[in-house]
Length: 433
Image (tube, rainbow, N blue to C red; front, top):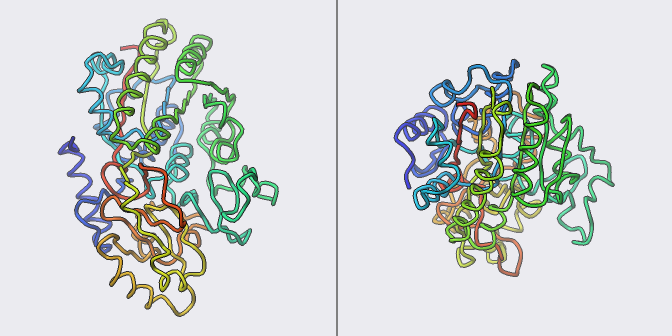
């Protein structure tokens, strides 16, 4: 599958205009924050519902014909659903449930994710409408100056913590309501009297990550499978046919399957088909006319995934001369690691990477990448520059940087600038068409 010519042109223009000085390889996909990125989706939603965010909205060519007379928006976020995977599923199965939207005036466009293309950064962009540089949630593992620890930001535990521990940073004083430097999307919409209703899998409904990303919603409801997600979503719209509102539903299982089996596995196509079947049969077909009126449906993803065979892992244990010059193990993600270098060792680290790792990774000055806008523009969060270290490594292909001695178990990952992890779909349709 290929990116359409229109998006390719925008990507190339953005890379040359903003990132030429970084020397990114031509096959890298630069985030297109000016109107063709996931961060532009919430900005467009806010505008359609009568408000405004400083982030640019989606390119009018994508959203203009859907945006008039919108009273309600349904936003479905499918974790790790790459554009090419959805396109492949649609082409392979003419009965895929999302064809029902495309046959009736809907459209499918590719967007770029943000950088890093990882859950903490990308989902937060979708739940705020601000770029990673602005919201400050810069990766899977972060060095938190305020606690003096390197922390894993899905579980909110120090990386050295006993695995049986649970959200230990909250016990140490981290406040989910104030961790981000920007308001959440529900907090922004509340200023315009637009409520937000959130559907999320039960296991995540009260997690620290959810509490950090999603603040100010009118209601959160947990669900068990995609089937009851669509049923609950339909029920909500039927109950409130006249209310201006945003409904957000999040489905994680494609990400889970892609990590375990790889994003090229046939399980991904099967899960997309099952998800789309429930959408068509439990949501779309049974939604009454009054619940469709003025309703815009949007489906997107936070990022995609790329196959990362364990044999492509680059082990830190094999690079002791590099490891001993770092203040601590790398932060960020295995596909977008940040290196924080000991004082006086930066030139030596640069030279070591250039000699020993340049075939596997592109090395960037992390602060130069920040200034160039790779993480987004706007007003940077106070901790952003401290959370990205001194150097950034980006894999040229399927590589990951791995600091544990046991081999990696996950065979699909994301975080870097490869097309498979950076390009995601935006499926848009009016339900009253």
